[in-house]
Image (cartoon, rainbow over the protein chains, first blue to last red):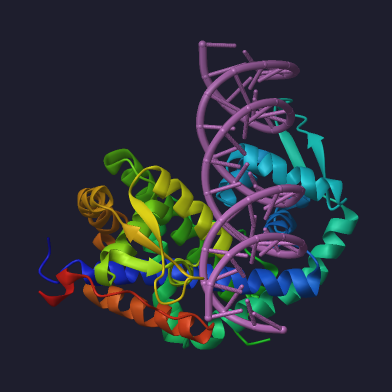
Length: 161
Length: 161
DNA sequence: AAAGATTGACGATTCAATCTTA
DNA sequence: TAAGATTGAATCGTCAATCTTT
């Protein structure tokens, strides 16, 4: 196909799949062990924490986390069961539902976030130079946009340092 | 923690997770649509195709694919059911089991591989320059090794071009 | 006793169908 | 009729226990 052969392309594919898998598994283990919540729960709490008023529509949340609607419904069932979020009917459009962070959910996130940051540092950023990180972020963002995704992340407060 | 704030680290994390998810989903869809097999099946067939005599121990295969042993057992159940592989007791150590590519499995792989290559090109390499690809592969390999993984991939024949 | 693989019970995710509201 | 969300059935993966062979 191209004059470099396909092996090189496949190598990049394999590296991407394997790196992501390994990194996510290790960070997930550490978060579960040290903060007592699954990575998926942290993702939800984090998104809500950085959202205005600590709430988001189910649909928004599903998109942000790359989950199907029903997948998010089930995930939120479990987190609500644990008391970290509640559902609230959306006032402006009563078809919609807000997932809202509770007091306890907020507390839990504040407890888990440092563990998560440390895990990301440990498995990801500690092994790459600033230049490598910047290059990788640029490349990954290109890939996301080229594939119809939207690299969205509500700015955490720490960014403003 | 560091003077760049944690937001930057988290951005890289999110970009990695999202890019991998989007890319894998798109390639998986295309493979399923155009070749009629799930991505996980292709992974197994590909590994076997590039292994000596078209066979591998279950354990090896599980490691290569980042799957648990039982996960691979189940996956191989389905693929064997479809007639693309068979199991054979390992002669030298009768505890072990070989997954062996069948004629039909080999045929199916030869049909699916071009689709897979095209999909990788479409979702991944088409959007990155040679330099970007090389930089990314280096960085990802570092990450894999730093996290106790092993970036292993039997050389495809095409590599020797 | 330990290694390789499988099985049962379970958790998490998806698709298709359903329910409610716009 | 369509959009937002949920539910039932099915798929896929994991952990712990089991079975066989070393």
